[in-house]
Each structure stands twice: as C-alpha cells, then as structure tokens.
Image (cartoon, rainbow, N blue to C red):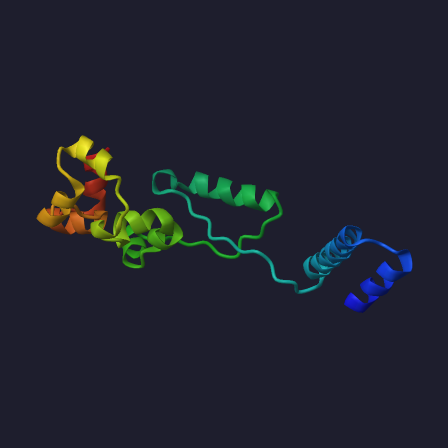
Length: 159
C-alpha cells in the first residue's frame, strides 16, 4: 500500500498533510470494509453476555420478561439456569464480574488500599496508620470471618 500512496502523492503533487488525510481515508475505508466483511460473513463470531436477575427480583414473571425483552431485540438466549448464593460466593462470580469494586471490598487487604488519611481520621477519630497497626480494619470478607457472620448478615448490618 505504501508504494501506491507514494506514487499517488508524486502524481498529484500533494504535501505531507494532505497525504496523511488520504492515507487515513484509505485506512478508514479499509477498516470499514473489513468490519463489514467480518460482521456479515457466515459463521462470524458473535458477542456473548451473561445476564443475571438480581436476587430480590427473581420470579418466574421477571425471568420471562427479561428473556422476552432480549429476544424482542433480536438476541438469542442460549441457556438459562440458577446459581445459588453459595455457588456465587464459592466461585467469587460477583467479585470477578465487578472486579474494580470487589477488589477493594473483598480481595485487597486494607494495607493495599489508597485510603485518604485525612478523611479517615476525620470520620473515625483514628489515624489510618494506627488503625492498620492495631489490626482493626478489614476488607468485607475478612470482617465476616472476624465477626463470625455471613455476607447476608453483614449486608443487613449495613442496611
């Protein structure tokens, strides 16, 4: 492609800026054509998603409405199932799904977090460094273990 663009530049007497625009247009058209071919070719890969209904909303009517809504938009539901809270906890499915949030709540230890020390001091009357050295701060999983409670009990305590 480069030799063709160079020949075109020389033939038309174009400057570098104009040639960059021509090259970008050629590249953009090529990308568009490639995307069209890729998306319209038989057997082309399709996107996939895992959709879940939040626990408080799980009813046969809601599940049917979600499936019908997806299908109405042209999506194909390939399988359905139920996951118990025990399986979700054991396999850390929510942690993996919401990693950015979950890492701070359940995976990282307090010493690994970037906590605004002034705000912590103001809120709790104890410095962050003192809280760490005294061992009185925990992530959510460790707090449940320390307190001898389940995740549901922790949730209720915060509600």
